[in-house]
Image 1 (tube, rainbow, N blue to C red):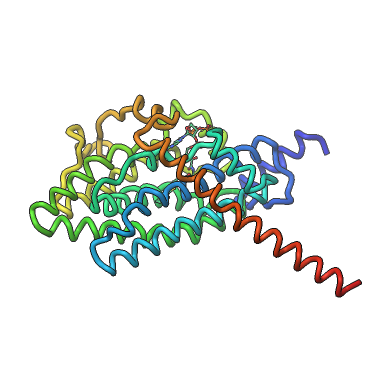
Image 2 (image 1 turned 180 degrees about the vertical axis):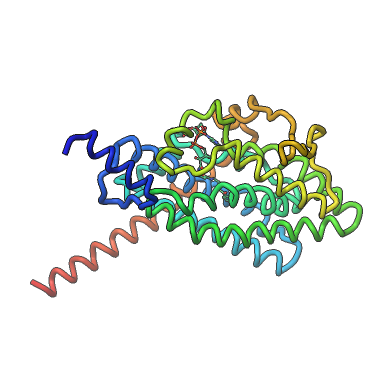
Amino acid sequence: MTNEQQESLFQQKIDNELRIEPKDWMPEQYRKTLVRQISQHAHSEIVGMLPEGNWITRAPSLRRKAVLLAKVQDEAGHGLYLYSAAETLGISRDQMLDQLHDGTAKYSSIFNYPTLTWADMGAIGWLVDGAAIMNQVPLCRCSYGPYSRAMIRVCKEESFHQRQGYEIMLTLANGTAIQKKMAQDALNRFWWPAIMMFGPNDDASPNSIQSMKWKIKRFSNDDLRQKFIDVTVEQANILGLTIPDKDLKWNEERGHYDFGTINWDEFWNVVKGNGPCNKERLAARKNAWDNGAWVRDAATAHSEKRDAKKAAISA
Ligand code: BYC
Protein backbone atom coordinates (compact mmCIF):
# COMPACT_ATOMS: atom_id res chain seq x y z
CA MET A 1 0.00 0.00 0.00
CA THR A 2 1.31 3.48 -0.79
CA ASN A 3 1.72 6.11 1.87
CA GLU A 4 -1.23 8.10 0.46
CA GLN A 5 -3.49 5.04 0.60
CA GLN A 6 -2.47 4.42 4.20
CA GLU A 7 -3.16 8.04 5.10
CA SER A 8 -6.52 7.96 3.43
CA LEU A 9 -7.53 4.77 5.29
CA PHE A 10 -6.28 6.30 8.52
CA GLN A 11 -8.38 9.44 8.00
CA GLN A 12 -11.42 7.33 7.08
CA LYS A 13 -11.10 5.47 10.36
CA ILE A 14 -11.03 8.75 12.23
CA ASP A 15 -13.98 10.14 10.28
CA ASN A 16 -15.91 6.99 11.19
CA GLU A 17 -15.19 7.58 14.87
CA LEU A 18 -12.98 4.50 15.19
CA ARG A 19 -10.09 4.69 17.67
CA ILE A 20 -6.45 4.50 16.61
CA GLU A 21 -4.55 1.97 18.73
CA PRO A 22 -0.77 1.82 19.42
CA LYS A 23 0.05 -0.87 16.84
CA ASP A 24 -2.08 0.68 14.05
CA TRP A 25 -0.42 2.55 11.21
CA MET A 26 -0.38 6.31 11.84
CA PRO A 27 1.26 9.32 10.15
CA GLU A 28 4.48 10.33 11.87
CA GLN A 29 3.08 13.81 12.49
CA TYR A 30 0.03 12.35 14.29
CA ARG A 31 2.36 10.38 16.56
CA LYS A 32 4.51 13.46 17.23
CA THR A 33 1.51 15.68 17.95
CA LEU A 34 0.18 13.17 20.46
CA VAL A 35 3.54 12.71 22.15
CA ARG A 36 3.78 16.51 22.46
CA GLN A 37 0.27 17.00 23.82
CA ILE A 38 0.07 13.95 26.10
CA SER A 39 3.54 14.46 27.59
CA GLN A 40 2.85 18.16 28.18
CA HIS A 41 -0.45 17.20 29.76
CA ALA A 42 1.35 14.68 32.02
CA HIS A 43 3.95 17.29 33.00
CA SER A 44 1.15 19.74 33.83
CA GLU A 45 -0.38 17.23 36.22
CA ILE A 46 2.90 16.63 38.01
CA VAL A 47 4.00 20.27 38.13
CA GLY A 48 0.41 21.11 39.11
CA MET A 49 0.91 19.24 42.37
CA LEU A 50 3.37 21.90 43.55
CA PRO A 51 1.18 25.00 44.07
CA GLU A 52 -1.38 22.97 46.03
CA GLY A 53 1.22 20.83 47.81
CA ASN A 54 2.35 24.14 49.29
CA TRP A 55 -0.84 24.26 51.41
CA ILE A 56 -1.18 20.66 52.66
CA THR A 57 0.59 21.37 55.95
CA ARG A 58 -1.35 24.61 56.41
CA ALA A 59 -4.89 23.44 55.61
CA PRO A 60 -7.30 24.97 58.16
CA SER A 61 -8.78 21.66 59.43
CA LEU A 62 -8.17 17.93 59.38
CA ARG A 63 -11.01 17.49 56.86
CA ARG A 64 -9.59 20.12 54.51
CA LYS A 65 -6.15 18.56 54.83
CA ALA A 66 -7.40 15.04 54.02
CA VAL A 67 -9.33 16.29 50.99
CA LEU A 68 -6.44 18.37 49.65
CA LEU A 69 -4.01 15.51 50.17
CA ALA A 70 -6.31 13.18 48.20
CA LYS A 71 -6.64 15.73 45.41
CA VAL A 72 -2.89 16.23 45.06
CA GLN A 73 -2.39 12.45 45.03
CA ASP A 74 -5.01 12.22 42.27
CA GLU A 75 -2.91 14.63 40.18
CA ALA A 76 0.08 12.31 40.56
CA GLY A 77 -2.12 9.44 39.36
CA HIS A 78 -3.24 11.49 36.33
CA GLY A 79 0.40 12.12 35.48
CA LEU A 80 1.11 8.40 35.64
CA TYR A 81 -1.82 7.38 33.38
CA LEU A 82 -0.77 10.04 30.90
CA TYR A 83 2.93 9.12 30.88
CA SER A 84 1.83 5.51 30.27
CA ALA A 85 -0.45 6.59 27.41
CA ALA A 86 2.43 8.54 25.83
CA GLU A 87 4.78 5.56 26.22
CA THR A 88 2.53 3.55 23.88
CA LEU A 89 3.71 5.96 21.15
CA GLY A 90 7.34 4.89 21.46
CA ILE A 91 8.82 7.47 23.82
CA SER A 92 10.13 6.51 27.25
CA ARG A 93 9.24 8.20 30.52
CA ASP A 94 12.91 9.11 31.03
CA GLN A 95 12.98 10.88 27.65
CA MET A 96 9.81 12.81 28.49
CA LEU A 97 11.20 13.87 31.86
CA ASP A 98 14.47 14.95 30.24
CA GLN A 99 12.43 17.18 27.93
CA LEU A 100 10.62 18.70 30.91
CA HIS A 101 13.84 19.27 32.82
CA ASP A 102 15.73 20.83 29.88
CA GLY A 103 12.79 23.10 29.01
CA THR A 104 11.99 21.61 25.58
CA ALA A 105 8.59 20.33 26.75
CA LYS A 106 6.01 22.78 28.03
CA TYR A 107 3.53 22.44 30.88
CA SER A 108 0.42 24.48 31.55
CA SER A 109 1.06 28.20 32.12
CA ILE A 110 -1.33 28.23 35.09
CA PHE A 111 1.08 26.45 37.42
CA ASN A 112 3.61 29.26 37.25
CA TYR A 113 1.53 31.47 39.53
CA PRO A 114 2.05 31.45 43.30
CA THR A 115 -0.50 30.25 45.87
CA LEU A 116 -0.51 33.02 48.45
CA THR A 117 -3.49 32.24 50.72
CA TRP A 118 -5.77 29.31 51.61
CA ALA A 119 -8.44 30.81 49.32
CA ASP A 120 -6.14 29.99 46.39
CA MET A 121 -6.93 26.29 47.04
CA GLY A 122 -10.58 27.18 46.46
CA ALA A 123 -9.86 29.25 43.36
CA ILE A 124 -7.64 26.56 41.85
CA GLY A 125 -10.19 23.80 42.39
CA TRP A 126 -13.05 25.93 41.11
CA LEU A 127 -11.35 27.69 38.19
CA VAL A 128 -8.30 25.63 37.22
CA ASP A 129 -9.94 22.23 37.58
CA GLY A 130 -13.11 23.74 36.11
CA ALA A 131 -11.17 24.87 33.03
CA ALA A 132 -9.43 21.49 32.92
CA ILE A 133 -12.79 19.66 32.83
CA MET A 134 -14.06 21.86 30.03
CA ASN A 135 -10.92 21.08 28.01
CA GLN A 136 -10.62 17.40 28.97
CA VAL A 137 -14.16 16.01 28.69
CA PRO A 138 -13.90 16.24 24.87
CA LEU A 139 -10.53 14.47 25.11
CA CYS A 140 -12.44 11.36 26.33
CA ARG A 141 -13.48 11.13 22.64
CA CYS A 142 -9.97 11.77 21.30
CA SER A 143 -9.12 9.56 18.32
CA TYR A 144 -6.15 7.93 20.06
CA GLY A 145 -7.45 5.01 22.17
CA PRO A 146 -5.02 5.02 25.13
CA TYR A 147 -5.33 8.81 25.63
CA SER A 148 -9.12 8.78 25.37
CA ARG A 149 -9.43 5.94 27.89
CA ALA A 150 -7.04 7.59 30.36
CA MET A 151 -9.11 10.76 30.18
CA ILE A 152 -12.31 9.05 31.34
CA ARG A 153 -10.98 8.41 34.83
CA VAL A 154 -9.12 11.72 34.93
CA CYS A 155 -12.35 13.60 34.21
CA LYS A 156 -14.28 11.79 36.94
CA GLU A 157 -11.64 12.83 39.45
CA GLU A 158 -11.41 16.39 38.08
CA SER A 159 -15.10 16.77 38.70
CA PHE A 160 -14.61 16.02 42.43
CA HIS A 161 -11.69 18.47 42.42
CA GLN A 162 -13.81 21.24 40.95
CA ARG A 163 -16.53 20.70 43.55
CA GLN A 164 -14.12 20.69 46.48
CA GLY A 165 -12.68 24.00 45.23
CA TYR A 166 -16.10 25.54 44.78
CA GLU A 167 -17.09 24.40 48.28
CA ILE A 168 -14.02 26.14 49.75
CA MET A 169 -15.00 29.32 47.89
CA LEU A 170 -18.63 29.02 49.06
CA THR A 171 -17.55 28.63 52.68
CA LEU A 172 -15.22 31.64 52.47
CA ALA A 173 -17.71 33.77 50.55
CA ASN A 174 -20.34 33.13 53.25
CA GLY A 175 -17.86 33.57 56.09
CA THR A 176 -16.49 36.71 57.76
CA ALA A 177 -15.78 39.90 55.80
CA ILE A 178 -12.06 39.03 55.84
CA GLN A 179 -12.73 35.52 54.48
CA LYS A 180 -14.92 36.91 51.70
CA LYS A 181 -12.18 39.40 50.83
CA MET A 182 -9.67 36.56 50.67
CA ALA A 183 -11.93 34.64 48.26
CA GLN A 184 -12.36 37.74 46.08
CA ASP A 185 -8.60 38.33 46.05
CA ALA A 186 -7.96 34.72 44.93
CA LEU A 187 -10.56 35.11 42.15
CA ASN A 188 -8.90 38.38 41.09
CA ARG A 189 -5.51 36.72 40.77
CA PHE A 190 -6.58 33.41 39.17
CA TRP A 191 -9.30 34.53 36.76
CA TRP A 192 -7.18 35.69 33.84
CA PRO A 193 -4.52 32.96 34.14
CA ALA A 194 -7.39 30.38 34.13
CA ILE A 195 -8.81 31.93 30.96
CA MET A 196 -5.35 31.68 29.38
CA MET A 197 -5.17 27.92 30.09
CA PHE A 198 -7.17 27.29 26.90
CA GLY A 199 -4.24 28.48 24.83
CA PRO A 200 -3.87 31.19 22.18
CA ASN A 201 -6.80 32.48 20.12
CA ASP A 202 -7.76 30.17 17.26
CA ASP A 203 -6.11 32.38 14.65
CA ALA A 204 -2.82 32.21 16.60
CA SER A 205 -2.99 28.47 17.33
CA PRO A 206 -0.68 26.67 14.89
CA ASN A 207 -1.72 23.14 15.94
CA SER A 208 -5.50 23.44 16.08
CA ILE A 209 -6.58 22.88 12.47
CA GLN A 210 -4.66 19.63 12.03
CA SER A 211 -5.47 18.39 15.55
CA MET A 212 -9.18 18.95 14.90
CA LYS A 213 -9.02 17.14 11.58
CA TRP A 214 -7.43 14.20 13.39
CA LYS A 215 -10.03 14.52 16.18
CA ILE A 216 -7.36 14.86 18.81
CA LYS A 217 -9.08 18.14 19.63
CA ARG A 218 -12.88 18.27 19.29
CA PHE A 219 -13.37 21.98 19.99
CA SER A 220 -11.17 24.97 19.32
CA ASN A 221 -9.35 26.89 22.07
CA ASP A 222 -11.73 29.86 21.76
CA ASP A 223 -14.89 27.72 21.80
CA LEU A 224 -13.82 25.99 25.00
CA ARG A 225 -12.79 29.29 26.60
CA GLN A 226 -16.21 30.77 25.79
CA LYS A 227 -18.05 27.74 27.22
CA PHE A 228 -15.99 28.00 30.41
CA ILE A 229 -16.71 31.70 30.83
CA ASP A 230 -20.43 31.20 30.23
CA VAL A 231 -20.80 28.60 33.00
CA THR A 232 -18.37 30.20 35.44
CA VAL A 233 -19.99 33.65 35.49
CA GLU A 234 -23.17 32.08 36.88
CA GLN A 235 -21.15 30.26 39.54
CA ALA A 236 -19.45 33.53 40.59
CA ASN A 237 -22.88 35.14 40.94
CA ILE A 238 -23.96 32.41 43.36
CA LEU A 239 -20.81 33.06 45.39
CA GLY A 240 -21.54 36.79 45.42
CA LEU A 241 -18.05 37.47 44.03
CA THR A 242 -17.11 39.77 41.17
CA ILE A 243 -15.16 38.56 38.14
CA PRO A 244 -12.31 41.02 37.51
CA ASP A 245 -13.33 41.98 33.98
CA LYS A 246 -15.17 45.26 33.44
CA ASP A 247 -16.04 44.25 29.88
CA LEU A 248 -17.84 41.05 30.91
CA LYS A 249 -21.41 41.39 29.65
CA TRP A 250 -24.17 39.07 28.44
CA ASN A 251 -24.62 39.37 24.68
CA GLU A 252 -28.21 38.49 23.86
CA GLU A 253 -27.52 38.23 20.14
CA ARG A 254 -24.60 35.82 20.49
CA GLY A 255 -26.12 33.95 23.43
CA HIS A 256 -22.76 34.20 25.20
CA TYR A 257 -20.88 36.50 27.54
CA ASP A 258 -18.59 39.05 25.90
CA PHE A 259 -15.34 39.47 27.77
CA GLY A 260 -12.30 41.75 27.88
CA THR A 261 -8.99 41.46 26.08
CA ILE A 262 -6.60 38.77 27.24
CA ASN A 263 -3.06 39.90 28.01
CA TRP A 264 -1.25 37.69 25.49
CA ASP A 265 2.10 39.27 26.32
CA GLU A 266 1.72 37.93 29.85
CA PHE A 267 0.69 34.50 28.51
CA TRP A 268 3.67 34.11 26.16
CA ASN A 269 6.03 35.45 28.76
CA VAL A 270 4.89 32.73 31.18
CA VAL A 271 4.99 30.04 28.45
CA LYS A 272 8.55 31.08 27.59
CA GLY A 273 9.68 30.47 31.17
CA ASN A 274 9.52 33.98 32.64
CA GLY A 275 6.40 33.72 34.82
CA PRO A 276 6.45 34.40 38.56
CA CYS A 277 7.26 30.77 39.54
CA ASN A 278 8.70 29.03 36.42
CA LYS A 279 12.20 28.70 37.82
CA GLU A 280 10.99 27.55 41.23
CA ARG A 281 8.67 24.90 39.71
CA LEU A 282 11.34 23.45 37.43
CA ALA A 283 13.92 23.45 40.23
CA ALA A 284 11.46 21.56 42.49
CA ARG A 285 10.86 18.92 39.78
CA LYS A 286 14.57 18.46 39.06
CA ASN A 287 15.27 18.19 42.75
CA ALA A 288 12.56 15.52 43.15
CA TRP A 289 14.06 13.61 40.21
CA ASP A 290 17.59 13.75 41.66
CA ASN A 291 16.42 12.80 45.15
CA GLY A 292 14.48 9.86 43.72
CA ALA A 293 17.54 8.33 42.05
CA TRP A 294 18.06 5.82 44.87
CA VAL A 295 14.43 4.60 44.56
CA ARG A 296 14.84 4.01 40.81
CA ASP A 297 18.17 2.25 41.40
CA ALA A 298 16.67 0.05 44.12
CA ALA A 299 13.66 -0.87 41.94
CA THR A 300 15.96 -1.76 39.01
CA ALA A 301 18.24 -3.86 41.25
CA HIS A 302 15.20 -5.65 42.71
CA SER A 303 13.76 -6.46 39.31
CA GLU A 304 17.14 -7.70 38.02
CA LYS A 305 17.46 -9.94 41.10
CA ARG A 306 13.94 -11.32 40.55
CA ASP A 307 14.65 -12.02 36.85
CA ALA A 308 17.94 -13.76 37.74
CA LYS A 309 16.13 -15.94 40.32
CA LYS A 310 13.44 -16.89 37.78
CA ALA A 311 16.10 -17.72 35.17
CA ALA A 312 17.98 -19.89 37.71
CA ILE A 313 14.80 -21.83 38.59
CA SER A 314 13.83 -22.49 34.96
CA ALA A 315 17.43 -23.44 33.98
N1 BYC B 1 0.31 26.71 28.76
O1 BYC B 1 -1.40 25.49 18.80
P1 BYC B 1 -1.81 25.54 20.24
C1 BYC B 1 -4.72 20.28 34.97
C2 BYC B 1 1.32 26.08 23.80
S1 BYC B 1 -3.49 20.00 33.85
C3 BYC B 1 1.49 26.44 28.17
O2 BYC B 1 -3.19 25.98 20.53
P2 BYC B 1 -2.46 22.84 21.09
C4 BYC B 1 -4.50 20.24 36.40
C5 BYC B 1 1.10 24.79 23.03
O3 BYC B 1 1.61 23.67 23.73
C6 BYC B 1 -3.90 21.12 32.53
N2 BYC B 1 1.63 26.27 26.83
O4 BYC B 1 -1.51 24.11 20.91
C7 BYC B 1 -3.36 19.65 36.95
C8 BYC B 1 1.83 25.11 21.75
O5 BYC B 1 3.24 24.97 21.92
P3 BYC B 1 4.06 23.70 21.33
C9 BYC B 1 -3.19 20.81 31.27
C10 BYC B 1 0.48 26.39 26.11
O6 BYC B 1 -1.64 21.75 21.66
C11 BYC B 1 -3.14 19.71 38.32
C12 BYC B 1 1.60 26.60 21.56
O7 BYC B 1 1.25 27.11 22.84
N3 BYC B 1 -4.14 20.37 30.28
O8 BYC B 1 -5.72 20.61 34.50
O9 BYC B 1 -3.24 22.56 19.86
C13 BYC B 1 -4.02 20.39 39.17
C14 BYC B 1 0.49 26.90 20.58
O10 BYC B 1 -0.79 26.46 21.06
C15 BYC B 1 -0.76 26.66 26.68
C16 BYC B 1 -3.73 19.83 29.11
O11 BYC B 1 -2.55 19.69 28.88
C17 BYC B 1 -0.83 26.84 28.07
N4 BYC B 1 -1.96 27.13 28.71
O12 BYC B 1 -3.52 23.32 22.19
C18 BYC B 1 -5.15 20.96 38.63
C19 BYC B 1 -4.83 19.36 28.19
N5 BYC B 1 -1.68 26.72 25.69
O13 BYC B 1 3.58 22.49 22.11
C20 BYC B 1 -5.42 20.89 37.25
C21 BYC B 1 -4.33 18.76 26.92
C22 BYC B 1 -1.03 26.48 24.54
O14 BYC B 1 3.68 23.58 19.88
N6 BYC B 1 -3.81 19.75 26.01
N7 BYC B 1 0.26 26.30 24.79
O15 BYC B 1 5.50 24.01 21.59
C23 BYC B 1 -4.57 20.47 25.15
O16 BYC B 1 -5.78 20.37 25.15
C24 BYC B 1 -3.87 21.37 24.18
O17 BYC B 1 -2.52 20.97 24.12
C25 BYC B 1 -3.97 22.87 24.52
C26 BYC B 1 -3.13 23.67 23.50
C27 BYC B 1 -5.42 23.33 24.42
C28 BYC B 1 -3.44 23.18 25.93
